[in-house]
Image (cartoon, rainbow, N blue to C red; front, top):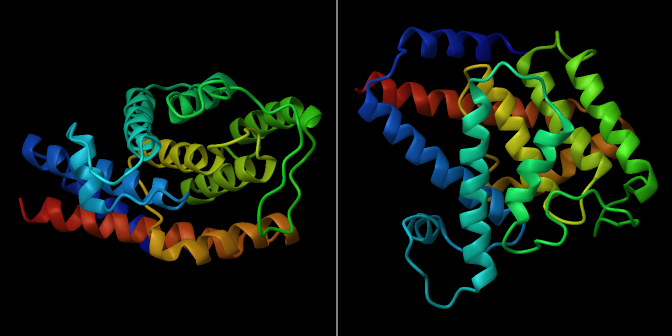
Length: 244
């Protein structure tokens, strides 16, 4: 399932280190794309170009303050993740909560970085997240499982499982999806892969595959989605790197 992924990764590694101008272009590309689509999946109505403008510090007329703040907070969360990509540190609850804190710091500061204590429901989903009192123990187990039982799996499996498991537990009142995607890409980037972007146009496939994994325990559809998105990212990075 991952043969083509491994092949593309080797091709990309052979082109490293990228010239500074190429590295800067790629970073700007994924910063805008990742931020736009990740926030759009949660209902943000800023277009791709408007997202880029907001990231440059310009206000877009006709859009809410919340939408602007979501974009800025997501960028800050990406930059925080980038700081730790090259650090040889295990995944921790503190790191997860810090990423979430940045995601919600301006729009929902009282809940930023805090596990929920009450129960939640997910609109349109048959999955019922665990009760609030179970969250601390479940998050502790998530981190332990990821750093032990899942440590020898292929990076695609590890990143996909971490994303799914976090959304399955739904440990926060809000911002679970954005946090899960940030953590998934933290794993990919730490392993030398480009970040994955789930396009807003694929929202139905994304939600359906997560729903299937949560309700039936079968992660195959979500794993295939992650694989396909990673292949797209690898091909984009290869195209830019080869043209330099």
